Length: 215
Image (cartoon, rainbow, N blue to C red; front, side):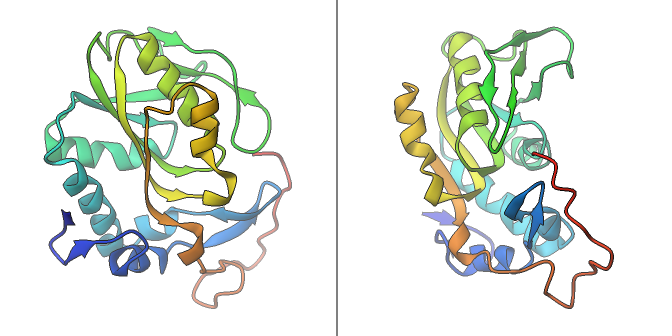
């Protein structure tokens, strides 16, 4: 059970729906539904609940450190790491961080390629690592992160995110990449994310136009 100060957490349940209520989607970079976690970051209660759910899920789990994926994992990972008194490290895109080990090129979630770097010494042989990101779509970025952790001699206990786009079946991609040992855990699925950012009157969007550039 994952208990919070409010109630027991259930995937896509009451707490998840409270967070989803303020998490809009927009057409962005050619994607019909780009989920914007900026919505719940602007709502202190929802943001606090998201951090609390992640924290309580792993409070009784034995692991060594938390790795956050570029870039929104940098927002969600540190408060969880502080609450659990675990070291936090960044998995950054190529050219963004000194003294790092670069991984192989991977296909980005929607279009194009990139590569990730991990700080030298962040993961030692035998370390157990929790990975955190905001969303898993095709799983390409997370697979690159898992590759790097394993290359350093560590293992990944779980890939945790706020949203999993289940229709894209990232778990199958994990399996095809030899990472069937790494479970994906998501706070919510796209089925409860129904806040249409362009059509909700509470969200100011005057003048917004999707630039159409690839993500």
